[in-house]
Amino acid sequence: MDGEADPVRRRRRQFQGVFGHALRQALAPERLDVAFVEAGSLAEARAQLRQGGLDAALIDVTMPDGNELDLVEEIHNGGPGARIPTLVLTASLDTSVAGRAMEAGAMGAFSKLASMPETVDAIKRLTDAGRSEV
Image (cartoon, rainbow, N blue to C red):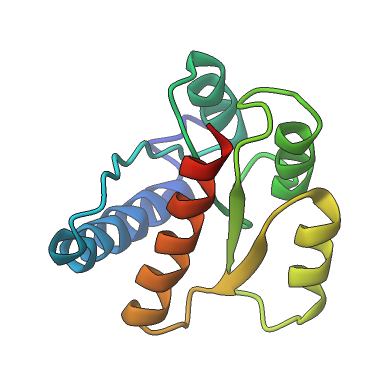
């Protein structure tokens, strides 16, 4: 089934668009030098990482085509986007997700249920870490 015809993928893209828009609005007053590159799948994320130019990555753990923690591990171990700081975004209430994300090499994990100020603070920490890596 074509990705655009798949109702789950279509809803996911709609959510990403709404979340991304809200996050951009919340970050605007912070005057952070942040550019958003969105990927709807692990394949798209890997392609974006291979193009380079990214200082950090916020990775959603509900991608449709594989295990996102594998992508975090790839980044941490020198794969696409080699060694850029990563944070994992999750809707899971399973507290072990954060531990597994950190074991894979992420700075940590935070919930999609977090408030927007908490999300902005996490993005600030991620971008600060990205700047200190260069």
